Structure formats: C-alpha cells, structure tokens
Length: 258
Image (cartoon, rainbow, N blue to C red):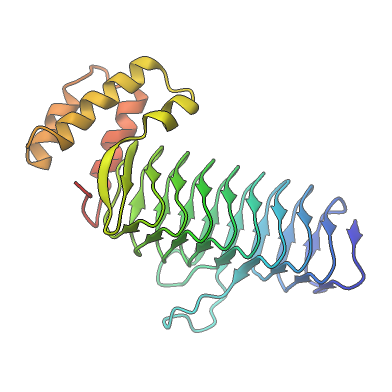
C-alpha cells in the first residue's frame, strides 16, 4: 500500500494493500476500499462506503458525504461503488437516506467528469458518462450506457432508461425511456440515440425494431396506453432490446417525456 504521509486515514478504514493514496487525502470511518484503487490527491471519502475494484479518483472529489436533505438526521446510511469507475475533479456523491433504501449505488465502468454530482439515494447502472457539471437530484435512477450532457439537471425521482442520450444544458423533470435522445431547457424529445446504439454494438435488427417502436410511441398520435399495445405486437417473442424499451415505459412513475 502506498499512502502519502500527508493523508489521513481513520483507524476503522479497511484498505487493500494495493491501493494508492496520494497527498492530502482523507479516508473516514467505516470506509472499505478494495484492490486496485487510485486516489490521486485531495480526495475525501466518508463512510459507511464500500468501493470495489480499480476505481480512479481525481483531486477534490468528495465521495460518501452525508446529504444536505433536511430529512437527514445523521442516520448511518451507505454508499456502494462498483468497479472500474472514473471520478474526475470535484465530483460529489452523497450517501442515502432512511426515507428511501438508505443507500446510494454506483455500478461499474462509469465516467463522471469534472464537478458532476450524484445526490442521495440515486442508482447508477453501468457504462454511463456524465459530462462536466451534470447533476442529478435525490432518488434518481439512471440505467446503463447513457450519456448525460454537460450542465444537465435531473429532477428528483426521475428515471433515465438504458442507452438514452441527454444533450448539454438540459433540464429534465419527467422520465426518459430507453434509447431516447432529449435536449433543451425544458427537455424535449429530439429522436433516437441511434449513434449510441451503434457504438454499443446493438444489431441492425435491434435498431430497426426500436425505430418502429419509437414511431408508435412518439409519431402516430396514439394515447400512451394504446401505443404501448401496438409496440408489444411488433415481435413475438419480444427481443431483449424491445423489452428494455417497453419496460422503461411501464416503470415510469413521474410520467414520460413525450
């Protein structure tokens, strides 16, 4: 283990011997850091927090701080971080609250660029990109393979579906289905994330069926319930990609952006 002498480590912290901790870092109580992690400098990690394998934390990131939510009364809530994530300069991530599931969860292979923020009780899946200054409020769920543009804000309790794309400076107050591309303030739907689907190796057949489903939901003038029935008729059996789209619509609680 390489720990710079200027860093402060709480005696209850559990840190794998392979972890590298640069100058002026602070590791607090009840923090667990698994193998291969690298804290460059001036990183603050508070607990209870568990960090998986091979994550990289850049300077001035603050990980596992308690939430400023006024409901929070100092309860012992948690943050869980998976593997191979990158947290760039000034990223902030808060632990959960007992009013939800008491935890915030970050999956694997995510890139959070400078000064992006993940609030209490959020769930991030895998392989997402948050551009600079993107911020999500409490209880937000972000799926997998999404891109959240710079200066974007997402209202509490919203859901962002797999493979969605959010343009820069977008203000989101409703749920975004999988594969959908949105932009502007307030957010509006501007199409499908066809480039993102191709880059993430979805087949031509999968992209074609999603395009058909998108037209039924957004272009034909159906009520949502009727449009969804038409979407479910497109394939028998339903492909995994189409099922992702359907499930992202059915799971909406705040209402879909249409």
